[in-house]
Length: 443
Ligand SMILES: C[S@@+](CC[C@H](N)C(=O)[O-])C[C@H]1O[C@@H](n2cnc3c(N)ncnc32)[C@H](O)[C@@H]1O
Image (tube, rainbow, N blue to C red; front, side, top):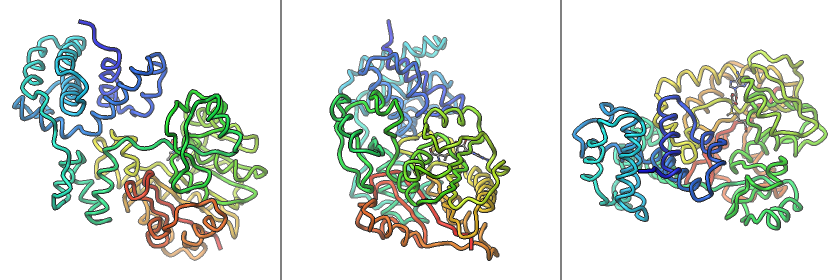
């Protein structure tokens, strides 16, 4: 029996994520996806993202029906079973026989013929009874939040400690939904073009005047996007770039894929901007994406930059766990381990120290992550500034007030964007990813 292209593609994507540590956002924008019909692309995305978002709930069902823990099931068989349970229990429009039969065929396609009868029996036993949606009446704890919203408990426990139960509930709920697609617009002309020939419907952004939310239409197929005039960029990421402000020499020391570099270039069209990226293939991607004439892309380690220093603005948007972006990157939650946060912290401290050395006296650095973890955020800045008299932590409130009075920031409640002296967006409290930023000035 032939298997639908969407289920085959979703199966291959999920297996690569599991076995090769691949990223779902990259695989869903590969040339293979381009070759699918729009309907198949949409179903592939729904299946891959759905399985990743709800993985522990699906595994719970599988373990109960099969009598085996998921760790005792071959990766190919487990992937086909997860796809089957997801369709049976979350996608009511898909007939049960299609969900079961195609998962069984996927098992055979993966040369696991001997497991086909097992897969068939397990999926038939599970059937179509829908997974109960998380109830609003529950007295939530870290453990019930983790179970109901399919997150690792150790991570949810950290969030409950840092943000309290109510905010953690908002984060977990947000992570299980399809996030909006935001773009940054530099001109009203581009907006007219998108609406006209591009057929893209846009709504105003919630945080920034230059942001729009894509309501319908395929933004990646428009000329404005392909020519690099319009960028897909979460509103919180746009806000971090706005915090960097204006200068005449700017350094973006961890720059790929370049959303923030492009925003810095738009805001500082006559400045000299150096954008550094460690990995050669990502530096190439950065060159392709950011075509502003005043940006020089260099492939270099932020710890050892060939630049001469003396920058009046530096952005250190460091590599991080990405726990503020789980609605877009749900595979992260199953991959991340507590000890990774320790390694990331060390790397982040080293990059921030090196970034500060690039500042001219009176210059400012923005340190940012898309992580919700204190260890990657406040704790990094505290460690770097401890005993340092040359640098001063500024209050983000002043920077946000400045952006609001210039009309760039349109979000009203500044308190919700601040945590102490830092910028802190929380997914679910604001309609955006969870970003953190701190501003440091060299005296
Ligand atoms: C969070 S991402 C940056 C996102 C980017 N600022 C944007 O808005 O599109 C961090 C980037 O830093 C790069 N990176 C990691 N370690 C680095 C280092 N030591 N020096 C320079 N770049 C590094 C990673 O490859 C990754 O592309």
